[in-house]
Amino acid sequence: MPVAESEAPPSDTLPPPPGDYAGHRARLRQRLLAGGAEALADYEVIEYLLAIGRPRINTKPIAKSLIKRFGSLAGVLNADARALEQHPNMGETSAAALKIVALAARRMARAAVQEKPVLASWQALIDYLTIDMAHLTVERVRVLYLNAHNRLILDHHVGDGSIDEAAIHPREVVKRALDIGATALILVHNHPSGSPQPSRADVQITQRIAEAGRLLGIVVHDHVIIGREGHVSLKAKGLV
Image (spheres, rainbow, N blue to C red):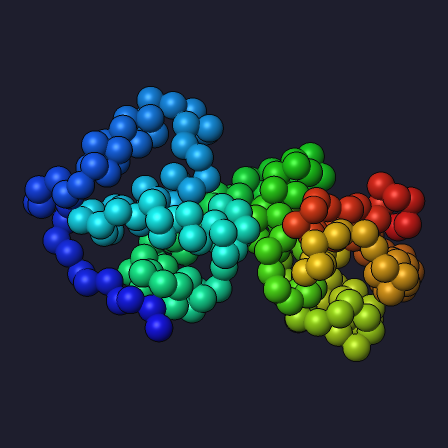
C-alpha cells in the first residue's frame, strides 16, 4: 500500500527541512538555476520535483526507487498516474507533480509541430511523437491530417491495438481526409516492445492506404513507427 502524503503549506513558510539533505537541496537549486540542460542527473530532476510539494522529507530515495522501477526519467514521467500514486512513499500530490511536467512537455512539443509546416519541421514532429508515444504500453494508431500547406489540421487517434484492417480501414482514413479538407496525411503508430522496425502488416496496410489515397488525390507522406529504441520512417526505407 502507498504511504499517503500530507498536504503542506508553501515551502517558503516553513523552516528548512531537517537533516543533511537541507543543504543538498539548496545546492540542487543553485545548480538548476545556474546550469544548462545537464545540470541535474535524471534522478535529481525527479527528486527536486517531488521536493517542491514535499519540502520536509528527503525525496532522493523516492526518486531513485522510481528510476529503478520505471527505467528512466522518461519512463517515470510517462508512467501511469495510478502506478505512480501507488508507488511507496508517493501519493496523489506527488504523482500529479510528475504528470504535470509530462503534460507540459507534450504541450510544448505539440506547439512546435503546429507552428510550422510539418515536412519542414520533421524533427519537431518526431520529438512530439516520441514524447507522446514511445513509452505507451499499448499499440496506438494515429493519423495526422495535413492541409495543402502541409500544416497539421487534425491529429486523429484512430484506436488502440495492432495496426491492421480490423483497427484502421483505408477507405475510412481517406474519407476522413476528404471530409475535413485534408490533402495529405501521415500514419503513426508505436511498438510497445521498444523496437520500431516495421512488420509485414505495417507495410501492407500502409500501401493499401496509399493506394486508396492516390485514387482520390490524398497523398500519404509517410508512416512513422515510434519505439523506445527510436523511430522508423517507411518512406525513408522506400516502403511508401
